[in-house]
Image 1: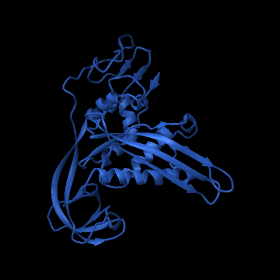
Image 2 (image 1 turned 120 degrees about the vertical axis):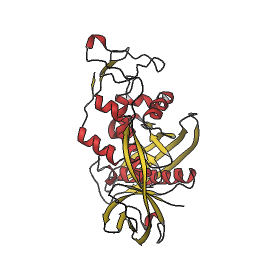
Image 3 (image 1 turned 30 degrees about the vertical axis):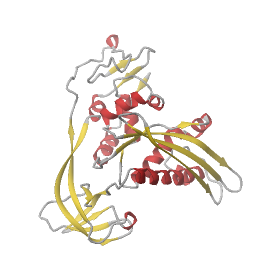
Image 4 (image 1 turned 60 degrees about the vertical axis):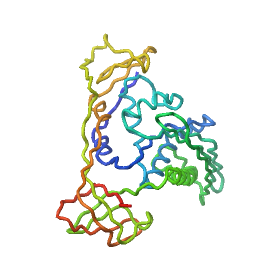
Length: 325
């Protein structure tokens, strides 16, 4: 029996700040592992997916769906199954992800090496293979493979790959290095993608954005600024199922799906899923962009830039900026 615990404040924060303004959206699935002990000991299947998510987000060219939302939302899907079933059932993954995130690509990954040698110094060697899959055809359009090595000056606690301190360990640093190279390869393969950032601060006629020299921003670069609103677009066929345990809808296959909010569901194996109506609805919030104004970069720093706002429009933090080509 699975009880879905929903943290309202955390989920609202993620939803409000996960702005889908990019031309390409990618969803990363849990990684498969050549050695199950890497999953049992380090939780590498989920952890490495999150490290790749961060690596792609840092490029500021691709919308990467939140991995934790993927897991939460899948629990509210019409099919009662573990989210890890998406590793091997790409059709199931595709159906769910197209409906929920409107993604263009799915990423599957394989952990080929995840070795840690402890002694006077911790030394890690890792290798990953990442497959970029077209969500419509379910064909792999390109596979990427890379390695990472890292040695700490001394021993450190061994955190799981899901831990916030994972990248401070030898395994984490080696993983981040390898996946950063893979993220570079993915963005290069996908072509000349526009840079997109956010307004972090607005003062008088100055707008501060989270793009700078490290993103190749230059004086005079012009940006369009957009306000993003979330709009709820529920499926047309809603139903009003109750919590009556004697009448739990049983989901048998993707061709026999009961659409709409169902608070309690089960499958033929007797597994029972509980889903809040709030979580179900969150899957169907879509972003609506409204053009506000344009502004040019007048000051450039390593990790941020300042735009001059010559318009009379009100521009607020968290509005998005898209560089004009």
